[in-house]
Image (cartoon, rainbow, N blue to C red; front, top):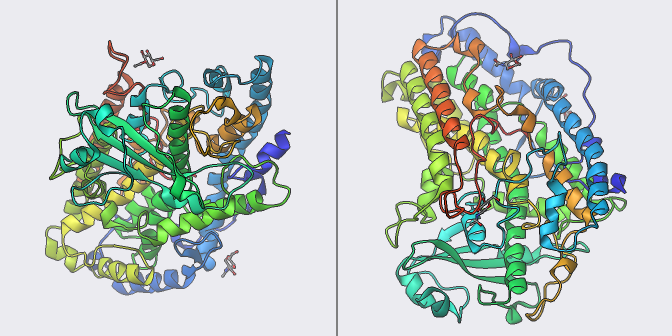
Length: 598
Ligand SMILES: *[C@@H]1O[C@H](CO)[C@@H](O)[C@H](O)[C@H]1NC(C)=O
Ligand SMILES: *[C@@H]1O[C@H](CO)[C@@H](O)[C@H](O)[C@H]1NC(C)=O
Ligand SMILES: *[C@@H]1O[C@H](CO)[C@@H](O)[C@H](O)[C@H]1NC(C)=O
């Protein structure tokens, strides 16, 4: 049984072979004590240019079965990929072994307590289990407070902000909500006109290829309450292919079972989005500008050195995922727990990449993105009373920006110095060849370079942390509130009697933890793999400017202070933390890894 659980794991680690140890360190790791330099300050410009030429030969673009961005190939690229595997793979294999061992014990414990007979029983999936794979379990509060509507709505403003947007007064409404006035005091149209209406639209997911489990493509409305200012759910419409015209609209006025099912159907969509979009949203979106940089910047260029630090061992992830997709599609892959096939997951990931949703560079700068979604600085409607994602992420990203500002300014005395850096200019041109979507059309100011580097660090440290490492398993893919798939077809009428008939079995629940624990890194809490240590590489810093070293120190102490703040958070007298019935601690900088782990 456990074997079949593992065979269906998305991140099929068993399929990965460790590469033979490399004896030579490779051209790009050549080491000396010279400080990093810009091209015009290099004493040996000719040797530098020749070395870049060699590098371009050894790092070429190729297509990859997983799709999305180009993947590196060539003699040097292949050496780096093999070398990276030596440090990257062992923790994954250890994790996988621990999760396999612990899954047997967890399953036995659930069954000895009588299995799952009500939603509250899923606490037994986590309680006292997974000592290595997932010891702390889901984020505090989510296991006990999932019936509170604010848990559902505030997850959109913390754990899963990437598909929620404010409806513009000029937008066409997607579906009517008859009960709107009874629920909110305002009609749907009034909510929209006043800028109080929000939407999550996952309707495209109804087209995905089903397994023997079930799911829908949901549209959900949320609103800012006219009196309390709370951000609350208004309605969920699950869409099923071929049945669109008879789609039901669920609201908090429905029976507890019906409304709970509707919320879980939408949560399932966000879990799928997290799982598959993260591949392109955090990994590929950062990998492809990096690959263009490798091909154009000298290994002595401080900007490439900084990228090397942030983009730690990025190239092994896609082969692992591709193996997972193939293993998941194999006839002997065991029972499916996702609603949709792994092949359609890959196709969907390519779709959101190609559309630019996850791949676009500048429009995904966190502030630009949140503004475009109407979540901050909206010209219409009230400000969000509480926006925990923005609260935490802005502290981290603005600290990164402060560091990058000092770093960039310490190398470039003016904007024209940036414009005169021939390698930076070559990088910008190369991003067109590499097909980086929406990259800046020129790099002629310090500000532009600071933005680029800040965003690269955000993709690895924040986006990946929210959608994979520490996020996901603890919120958007935690049980019972966010199943990966449902065991019963989506109802054609209201009045669900037995919610448990839809819910994952103990085997399915254990599978869900095993799958997502592959990314979780509890054992790295309070180590130098965390965001606080993003720039803490003394060998690197010793060859950079003194200003950069001072800035790295400041960044570290700012992050330590923020971690202290995050860890001191409590539920208030109303059982809330920042307006949420759960404690969203995913962006604790002494816990979240600084890079895109897996
Ligand atoms: C690099 O690895 C890829 C994938 O294994 C292979 O197709 C390609 O031939 C290799 N290139 C070189 C130059 O070794
Ligand atoms: C991170 O910590 C480990 C273990 O203490 C150490 O071996 C490693 O050198 C550190 N890394 C850096 C970049 O300082
Ligand atoms: C949420 O859960 C926590 C921990 O179980 C509890 O202290 C708090 O009162 C709950 N909040 C609400 C609003 O139910």
